[in-house]
Amino acid sequence: MSRRAVLTAFFILLAASLLKYVWLARYCHPMADDWSYAHQGITRDLLPWLQGEYLNWNGRYFSNVLVGKGPLVLGLDALWLYRSVPVMLVLLTAVAAFVLIRSLARETLTAREQMAGALVFLSLFIHGMPNMGEGFYWYTGGVTYQLGNALFLFHLARLVRDRSARETSLFRSLVDALLIIAIIGSSEVHMVLMVALHGAAMLLPRASATGSRARKWWKLLLVIACACVVILAPGNAVRSCIVR
Figure (tube, rainbow, N blue to C red):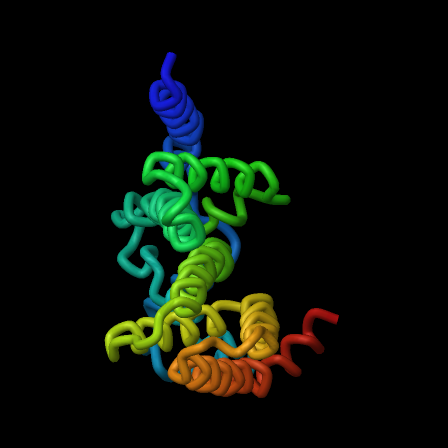
């Protein structure tokens, strides 16, 4: 068999082995915080509720919007939409891994090899998760953590591409800014990762393009500003006392 045929067979078998995780989504059911957040989403307006969460629970300004207005606010008739979220998270993680691998190995790997690499990454990631149920099949946990993970991969890919780009468009800068805002607002873990990532990026050798250095600075400043929003949320202190 040719190398291409072997790679194609490997790709098909790997994709087929991952289909079961898509199929499992039809059996997931709302649980725990899904119900309480759905109740809040139905009975309260979004902005006052978000303000209450910020003052009394946490500073996750992005994921709180998603959990506060999840599929269950539409009632149990939207259970199909609830079950579609794990499917979208699995696919989004695979696409994000592909985009990252493509940005790293555009010149050395074929598109088919890049896709196979993305599926290998997804498979290893799934099997390494301590609790896949909470990571993908529990809506509240999925949109808080796994969505942030996928967006983080997209952001890494953008940083890799930025290293070789002398100029960037206003649209791409806007995409970068939205990714930073969304990732940091997903959870405290993602906030720490983003601060560490962009802090380390400033220590890398200066790129030949002056615009690259300027991009690093405005991204770092935006990261710090968003991190401050999360860290300074009064709800963090309230939540820590309750958890203790």
